[in-house]
Each structure stands twice: as C-alpha cells, then as structure tokens.
Length: 379
Ligand SMILES: C[S@@+](CC[C@H](N)C(=O)[O-])C[C@H]1O[C@@H](n2cnc3c(N)ncnc32)[C@H](O)[C@@H]1O
Image (cartoon, rainbow, N blue to C red; front, side, top):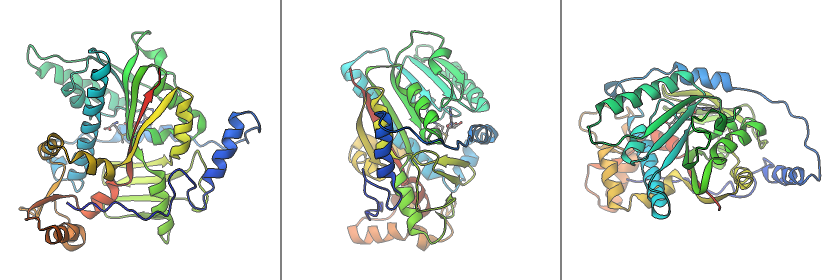
C-alpha cells in the first residue's frame, strides 16, 4: 500500500504555524506563566453542550450497517492503531511495574476500546465521558461483555462516570478516593478541551494528576500543523473530500486556545473542534511532571508498526486495510481511478501482485490528519 504522507514542510514543526504567530504567542504565554506580563481578557466560547448532544444523538449501528459504511476501513485502521498503541503501552507498564493494572479512559465514548482493555488483561478501568447516553451504552456493553465471558476468564472491574472532564475534577468522583492509574488513554478527545486554557488545563489535570510515577498518558488528536497546512493550501476556508470536511472561520491567525474549526466525517462526527498547538500542550504537561515520549503522525506510526509481523496479522484480522481491487465492488468508492490510483501505481512500481491492502485516497486524507502522543510521568 502506498501511503502518501504529506511531506511538504510548509509548517515548521516546533515553530510557527506559518503567518499564524503561534510561536510569538507561545513566547508571551511563557512570560505570563513567569508572571512577567499579565494575560489579556479573553472571550470564551463554550461548546460543551453542543459536543455532548452531538455524541449523545449518535445511533449505535450494528456490524452489518457499519460494514457498508464508506469509512469502514478507515475506522478499522484507527482501531488497529489504537490497539497497537494500547498493547505496546501495556507491555511497557508490565515490564517495569505492577501486574495489577488500572486505566482511566478519558472520553471513553460508547466503549469502543473496552475489548482492547479486556484483551490487554487489565484489572481496573474508569470510563468517563461528557455524553451521558454514551456512558450508559459503554456501561451496558461492559455488562454484556462480562455476561458473555467464560467462567475462568478474567474481566476487569469498572466504574463509569458522566462528567465534563474539561470542567470537573474527576478524582472527586472516583469510587476509591485513593485510586491511582498506570495509564490514562484519551483517544480522539483532547482537542475538544483546547477551546480555552481553563478547559485544556482541567482535562490535562484529570489525565495526569492520578497517574502513578512512571505511568503513561496516551492519546490521538488532530495535528494542528497538518490542518493549518491544508487550510493555507486551500483557496477557501475549508478543505476535505467526499468523506470529511474541515471548515475554519478565517485564516492567517491562529490563537493558542479556541482556534476553532468545524469537523464533519461521514455520519459519525459533525462538531466544533479546536486546534491543539502541540508545543503548548507539551509545555502545559510539564506542570504535571509529564515528559513527552512520543509524538508521531499516523502515517509514521503505521509505517513503523507495520514492519512487525504480529501487528501486520492484527491488521488483517481487524480488516484495517481494504483489498484492492475489491471483489464485490461493495464499499469501493465510485471514482475508482481517483480513489485507488495510488494502489495501482504502487503495484506496478514495486512489482507487488494485486490484490493488495490499501485505504481509498479520501479515507487516507482523513486518517492522516491525526497524530499519536505518549507522555510519561516522571518519578
Ligand atoms: C471521537 S469520540 C471518541 C470516543 C472514544 N475515545 C473512541 O476512541 O472511540 C470523542 C469523545 O470525546 C467525548 N468528549 C468531548 N469533550 C469531552 C469532555 N469535555 N469531557 C469528557 N468527554 C468529552 C465525546 O463525548 C466523545 O465521546
């Protein structure tokens, strides 16, 4: 499969989002942190209710309907990537630390990662989300999983919390007030909190304050550099394709917090989100004694992990790539040349026999927006 990671360096990682002044804003922020200047008054927009009601209104669809979706393989790909990340972090926790593993799933949604935690053999899970309906569905999925498990199969204990994790202190809601975690997993969630400094900080506090020394904060979030690069390359205020669309209100200036865009993805997402300027995220995490261990675009993460046989076979099992050419034509995009030309070209260039595994161009353009991060709590 040919994955075209957008390599044009219009945006300079660790530096400014071109013309957007984020580096200079960051410098000012550091001065504010040191008390050298006072922060300006800001207009804070709160989209929590919109986000919660959007996720609450999402219908759970069965496997049959999911498998007909235009983004079936992309969702599987994202799930594979999360499985690899979670699996490798659990290995690391067990290498050095406890055999009893506790996890906080921050923004757990409907429990898309429950099975990953079960397979990982953890002992305790706390699931929290702002969307009450999602938390209920997550809990009933867990109860089902427990009922269906074999007699001698070990299933973790779990607590489910409905809370706005960018406003409320989660530790006050824990059944066990002494609870500490080995891992906090925050998958496709943290960007919602970057709406304001207070929210981003509370979410970070919830992610990190109950981590044991050596514990990990892992997650996936859109890469602000990639989003701005695509916006700047567009001749309008939006970009996307037949599966996703990102729309900004303006371009040229990108505030550190509350730099909002609207994201829609097939029938799954249709909400306001905020850019996460990663150097600032990393800076803020230091307050909680967190050290950045890894920040990698999905394309880079994929290219590295797919080299390992067990990750490749999991990929097949999870149907994380689409066979091309597709036998039944079912999920294949209508514009076959435009959507799969890269797979055909790759097969000719690299002498790889068809069929091969790929993602349609539109799905890859959507998936390649994201990055993976791992922070570790220093002792
Ligand atoms: C894209 S979904 C991801 C769900 C899940 N982590 C997964 O990977 O399947 C984003 C989730 O973040 C949750 N979320 C957004 N803002 C939140 C907040 N302030 N506090 C808690 N959860 C939040 C949403 O309700 C939604 O369930």
